[in-house]
Image 1 (cartoon, rainbow, N blue to C red):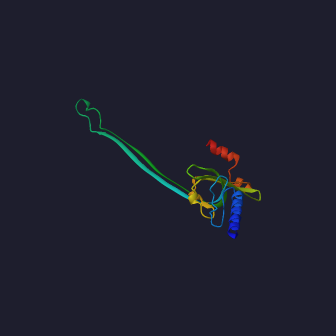
Image 2 (cartoon, rainbow, N blue to C red; image 1 turned 90 degrees about the vertical axis):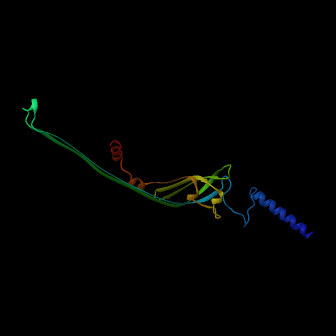
Image 3 (cartoon, rainbow, N blue to C red; image 1 turned 135 degrees about the vertical axis):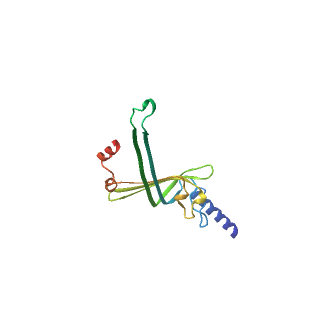
Length: 190
């Protein structure tokens, strides 16, 4: 009788857990990583980019023309000695270089918007931080493989396929580094 009560109690508790968690039984031993639509996960954005380019061109061209003649002979002996000379020179030496470097480290919580047929997850998330009327906005979207999600439900941005990460700001500090309307117009014209 005692084992029968235990089985009934376990069945009731298991049935309650299935109902309470929508068919997914969670325990201390299950993995709580995102797997379904509307699940959430944390994206650790760790991006660093550095690019550089150097170019140089050096050209040199010289031309010379000269004509000389001795005193004519035969029927043209009356033409005195003649001569001409000329020169032409072109040179160009050009150098250019460019470099760009950027780093972004942030944490953004994203939501699973779709589960693809192969099990991969389409994610999308954004974060808005406002301090003293300055807004910083971080957005991320892309596709992740469930096996790349860590056990603490975190994925690193370098494991996000088709990743689109944007970081922008609004406010006085952000607007202060932009050129004015007249400067932008003159840059556009010239």
